[in-house]
Image (cartoon, rainbow, N blue to C red; front, top):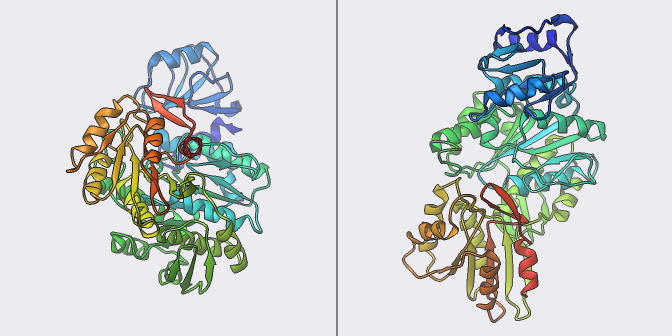
Length: 481
């Protein structure tokens, strides 16, 4: 719960309160009002709800229907001139985050918070951290792949980083469930949309950066994308940064200009020797680790998670056991066909992650490589050119372009856009199931491989704004083995 008076005080301290405008007949006595619910969904309100108006497409009629349902107050950047008072603010998303913290009893203060950001590797790193902390603690996990607030029940999140009202409700549930730590992925959108405004993380990890999520409904430029990624560093008590990442110096200068208590000790840790299923490190952690996920980038993710968890209380034994036990749905999952050829299922969904995936597979599989790939519709349009230019440098591949969450776009049109950057012939098959079937049929011996990239463990296709049922790449590949 949160009182009217407390809510106003929080907004004023944040310099976000403007005024209360009331033109209707409703009379209220501010000190006596307590809100028992907070919401940004106008269909989900009661007389005791504090409602937040957010979104460019919000319409006055939504608010009018909420008033009829009993709503008595709303927070907004605009006065919609309805019959109830508006608490006018400069930034409604900032208001949402701070008031949600208070409403749910400041659960962030009762958990150790670990956040990962980066263009790629966030989910895998979060899983490594979850398995490590699970050895001696009770972590909760907010991940693109799976979320758990009790360590037993898992569900898929709609957003990489939930809206602030949902985020702090989840945190409060984790606290109620006796969780000690919360591991989460923090996207650039989380800072752009102020979903984590006012939140300080115990450890923030910056894995890497490359152009992505640039488009009309995301970030207008790479500079804007990179800037919002770096905000995690400003809002973490301790940080772990990949010194081999692009633009490292920019991040390093930013980090060293802020008072952090653990940056310097972690910056010199490195992978000294690596094999497919083990790697050795030097630095704070001078150890040998067993790992199920092949590829140096997965070893880097494991190292980043290890250093972060070390800061949060994990032992060397916890780290070694956790890394060895970690597997991630849709991340480098491997099947073997009857003819001996391998099938790799991975979420690689941008140019950099696909390049890493190709390098790993080609290191271990020396025969024919068949790649099944698509690009999402209505978002991340820059990926299409990135994919095409990357594949054009790999004429040895057999490429099948297909659907991957086409949304309101034609998957064939997306495929043709990718193919326009490729100078050799490729297959184009709109139905992803048929594309996978075709790919498996093109292999014939041990050493050959099929790569199913992009969907990972997703069991849906986003078509015309809706999630349509889809068996998933792994299940479909199993069917045609």
